[in-house]
Image (tube, rainbow, N blue to C red):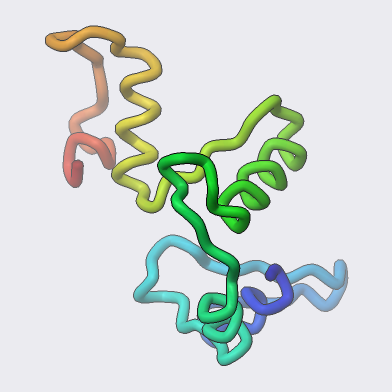
Length: 110
């Protein structure tokens, strides 16, 4: 949950003026899970996401869709996979080309 995530030690910060907190999710090496986060992982209901049967993933996708005012959400387990989905949304055929910057993340790290 968001409250569990915000207690994720050094990777989070709070803003006393607004009462909000920020969690740095750039990398799993920056965010150490709290005991509550670990317990959530251990007790979360699971299913086969390939067949749309994982209630936790379905709930997360619905939450994200509602948050951004979209019809559907899509969970992908890594930034690399998210980048590939974004690229394939624009480059529909094999041998498609795209123009990217020489210092872009995709050029340097993907």
